[in-house]
Amino acid sequence: MVFKRYLVSLAVLTLAALPVLAKPNFSGDWKLNASKSSFGQMPAPSGMTNKITHADPKLASHVKQSGDQGDFEFDSNYTTDGKECTNEIFGSPIKSTLKWDGDTLLIDTKGQFGDSEFTGQEKWTLSDDGKTLTIIRHFKSSMGEDDHKLVFEKQ
Image (cartoon, rainbow, N blue to C red; front, side, top):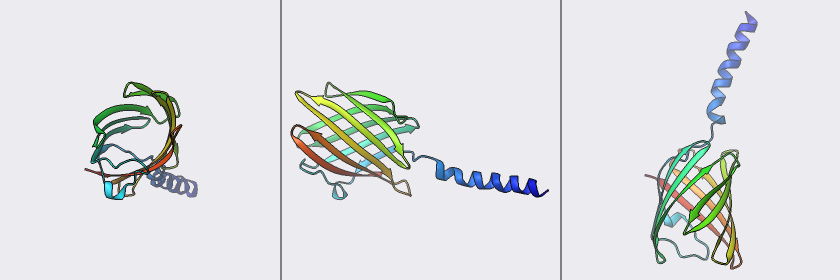
């Protein structure tokens, strides 16, 4: 009887811990809050949205951005299992690797635009209430380095 109670208690504790073990789900329609974001040496876009579909390990992103450099949009498809993913942006192949570090999604990217090679690192975090997505970016290329903080609000 004591052993049975022990097993029931263990099962309840295990089930209670499952939400803690679940990874964040970034799915949603997200709109950039430019006033809470920073763009380093780059001009801030006048608008940016990101429609994300996330069913781990698959993650798809559709970004629309407008600003002084014009309007553009692109789609990216990834997996969060550490395997290299290739997407094409502005006609150039971009290779990324995504992996989890606790509740933070880490993205390492490398690519080339024209003669300029670049690398980038991103850290994606979701607020506890699931309404704010924060992306911290670091870029490095022959033109220098830059850091950005993008804060998106769920629509």
